[in-house]
Image 1 (cartoon, helix red, strand yellow):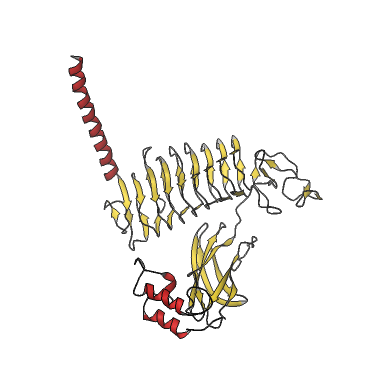
Image 2 (cartoon, helix red, strand yellow):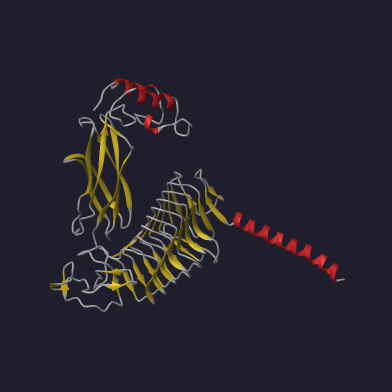
Amino acid sequence: MKKTAHGTILPLLLMVMLALAFNIRQAESSGTIHINADGSIYPSGVPISSHDNVTYVITGTITDSIVIERSNIVVDGAGHIVEGTGSGNGLSLYGMSNVTIKNLCIEGFTYGVYLEFASSNVICGNNIAANSYDGIGIYDSSNNIICGNNITANNWFGIGLYYSSNNSIFCNRLANNFDGIRLHYSSNNSISRNHVADNDNGVRLYDSSNNSIFHNNFTHNALQVYSESSFNMWDNHYPSGGNYWSDYNGADMKSGPYQNETGSDGIGDAPYTISESDADLYPLIDPWSLPLHDIAVVEVKLSSNRIYADQMADIKATIRNEGRETETFEVLGFCEDSLIRTVLVSNLTPWQQIVVTLAWNTTGWSPGRDYMISIEAEPVDGEEILENNAKTVTVEVNLMGDINGDRIVNILDLFMVARAFGSRPGYSNWNPMADIDENGKINILDLYKIGKNYGKTY
């Protein structure tokens, strides 16, 4: 009898489990919104609109997860809410890059925003609250920007970084989470100008070193910092200073790099101890406040790995408004002391960043030497922090046709073009260095440019 009952119950249990699994898969399939790799939105009819497959605007309340499978897009919440029921992720990016998520309210998921193997994305100006794990969870990801978000009341961490590096976290408010920010095996990240308040732990670090953590306000966290096997930089040297700590009780009677000169300077005379090996050497006496006006040149890149004389080259500069006011200003590009180009940037809102392209005509610049390229953002009225208004890069100008960089145009360069002849990006024999005129195909024009300077050296 027992054997018969057991034999009857087991198939029933299996049927129930299969039915549950089927129902779960069905729920995941029909209850998740996808911005597909081709730009389409699935399912149709959800409150997301796009006219160009680049900017996606949320037009109403969404109660499902959103999976983003397309890079180089903007998801603008326009103040609407994406609301869950305690599971799934609000917005997920797997392997995506150059995606901006902004102006959204995200709450009630496992992770509000989840990034994995994702790079160069921007999560800016969102309200992220009441998620069962992290407000923003970042795994195996790099070069992302997390700025201007209000991240509160998440059961785990406001922002969690796991095995991630070279991310920038700034100008966020992180309050009433278990940990405001947690770093786990993560290094070379920048954490600055955040308000970290009323969390169980302000910042928690496990095996995470070489991070820059300064100009933050740590206010009334039960434990301001928990650091294990981690060695980080907690100040920006003197006189820039470190962080504000609400439990710091040191005096400010002295000044100077060694705090041994007469007169106060807004920096504590004694360090703030983080751990046995770490300290904020220059703790701030008063809370850090975001400047009203601050324009920063974040990065400068050249459009190509090789710049040739007598050719146009694009200089791409990433500019960010790190102040509290919308700004209009000019960006100037210089080669040595000569003006290359001026670009007007209009109405750049707080925490917004753009990429400005300045075209550089290398005609007249002698090949065979390095040149200093400088990109400068003109200071706006009232701007006091000027050290971040410019960046420089060094560029070598080569003789047209010298593909391999050996300072002579010869048979070796011809051979490189011949091997890639007729190819385009995606072809097995594609070689971008052989595409001298950078038109996306290797043809007779590239051979002509080598032939024109064949035998020349420099």
